[in-house]
Length: 152
DNA sequence: GCCAACGTTGGC
DNA sequence: GCCAACGTTGGC
Image 1 (cartoon, rainbow, N blue to C red):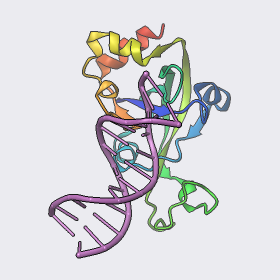
Image 2 (cartoon, rainbow, N blue to C red; image 1 turned 45 degrees about the vertical axis):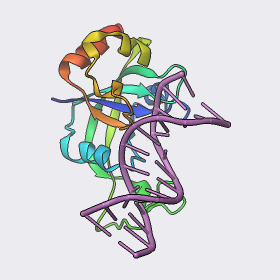
Image 3 (cartoon, helix red, strand yellow; image 1 turned 180 degrees about the vertical axis):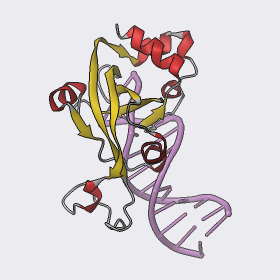
């Protein structure tokens, strides 16, 4: 069982939306490192810190879990989508996404500042300077602390 | 809206 | 393979 942090802009897709939808394909990732995590490392049941980026304030909003192994991201074939990739073919897809299922929303958002203020989290990837990766592995010890900070 | 940091592209 | 130019992310 592994642990992850996945970023989403709440204006685009929030944890409340995920709660409503129950599950969603994590489409639109167009970064190779992030794709590789989904395609190669994620297993069904892995737990996810659902992070709101570009928010006021930014931070971890709750928990989700991987509910389906990676399959080709269908938006890469959709000419009307902003995520269309002309180099991708059905035979040789380039982009993959897992399905993510709602688990629980935190009682209160654990803000980026809250994470920074906790010295036990000082080596968390999301706190590293210039860290833009939208999907990151998280140590179990960090996951447990953040979960507790979120009141779960 | 600004801009630092990082990723990608493409000419050579 | 190098690297300048460009594009994107995401905090502020």
